[in-house]
Image (cartoon, rainbow, N blue to C red):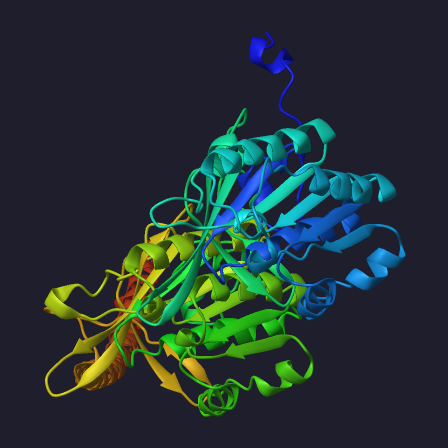
Length: 576
């Protein structure tokens, strides 16, 4: 059943073409209506308004008019040339018209009835001459700054907004922020259909820009404050992608770069496009594990983008070579790109936009950020968490596997808590820690979390060798898993016990052999003795049979009349 609301016409909108702004406004600015863009000095009002015109020309083939009351056409053209905006060419193509209206308070004399009819005629001509669909007035304070009659001022402001609506052009009017009000006159925001506030604040020497849609008649919109950035490509408003969780996922499993770690997952790795968090105290080989993952990604012929906040590319490559991870060939093959800088070089939104830009340009299959804990120095915990949320969502949508390292303090036993609070956002969480024993410190690794996959619950000791990270076999002693020197001692004891058992087995084998030989000799003697007895008995039996035969012959002779000597011959063994 179709919702009644779906059948009703919606407010038509004009897309701005500014990255992120159309997502927040759910389609753009109100079509054919004025929008007030207000903010303090230096927040980018004029630049955003000009980009609105430029994107209209480039993306939607809509001509525009820029009427400025402060800067000349040449000054504006030169100012935005660094962003790649060629206003002269657009004017030559009849797609843009620049008109500078000079207003000097000392030259203005307020007498009799004052109105903006002259401005309307001039602006109307500019619009009609090129068929403009978009108009920018910069700034409204300069237009009305010379007049003190509030009644006339308010009347003409209303008339200006009504005239623009009747003209049917989508307009941006820039305005300076007043003291405690959105604008200096305090009236423009009430007659505007849409009001956007730009804010430029400095917190702990870090500049942060925020955008908020204060008002939008006839339309829903994002109501939060959104960071925006002025870069060499124009204005980018963030977030762009974190409003919904409707991205697709992959079933492919990729290697972690450490065979022993792969074996701890039931699927022998983690999912492609997932997010992985690697936490640990200082010196627990987080960077080495991250570099192993980056090297494994490049070994498959895929691209990896590595953000290093603590080491330069040369230092990272040198350090990893000592543990058998040679990253230089991958840099030469353009499979690996290392972006190294201190986090304080830019604000959070700048880091996020840099990530967006590099991912679009380099198109990596994996991204490593080492470490995210350093971002705390350029923003509050909530700001960093918000930024990382947007970053994770952006990478997931693009099916980019992300690995983040984070430093944990280890105070009060909180070895598994990150200050950024992003552990709940990631799919896989691996903890590396120091395993302190008697007079030594070893490294241990465990999997705290792996969404959608069975995994080992053991704490595995690992070492860094000349050929990378190696997980050691689990040795369990009387009090649990044994590491370090205890492992060596246990191994020596086990080897000694094994040698004893082997010696005992060999001794038993030898004893068995001796007994076998004795028994065989005994059996041979018995067999010889038996044969002698058997021979003797056989001989006696033969003699007995001979006597019996002789007696039978004797009896037979007597029966026929012979002598006894004839009849009973002497037996073979009888004595004479």
